[in-house]
Length: 163
Image 1 (tube, rainbow, N blue to C red):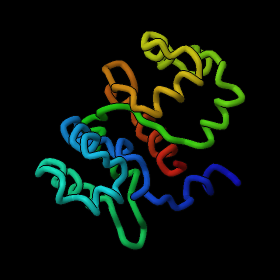
Image 2 (cartoon, helix red, strand yellow; image 1 turned 120 degrees about the vertical axis):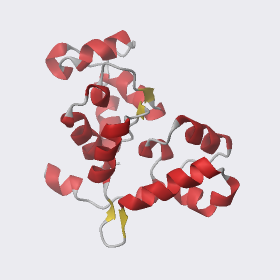
Image 3 (cartoon, helix red, strand yellow; image 1 turned 180 degrees about the vertical axis):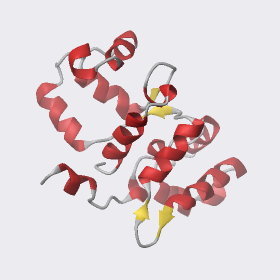
Image 4 (cartoon, rainbow, N blue to C red; image 1 turned 90 degrees about the horizontal axis):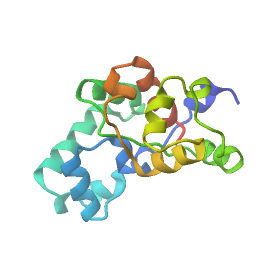
């Protein structure tokens, strides 16, 4: 299966971890307190949340099409304007890779200039990177969308569609 086929596979976006959709910090905290971790549960328990959370959830509907599903590209492009709250990744293929090759060092030769930022955060192997991304890594200045690189959106969309 080539990369394009994998990217075009349908994803049950309602079951993706809520952090994947980059809720603002107050919304994220409220959902965590309520133990709501995916959009399916949020939609069934919306009345338990606050106004800010309901507004955020309703805003997500702009990226949903009954025939096409969730428009990840449009969603992530919109975040480039407001910024990502944190970097989050759930990718079974990356998990599998890290089980076998997790000790590979993150260096300039394989991660480019992002390696400097990652190393400063104490992330020196791909296994450590995978673990930190599973829990959401704060997106401080110096990496990805905070630098406004188009490639960061493409990277996120690629993994979003494979989750």
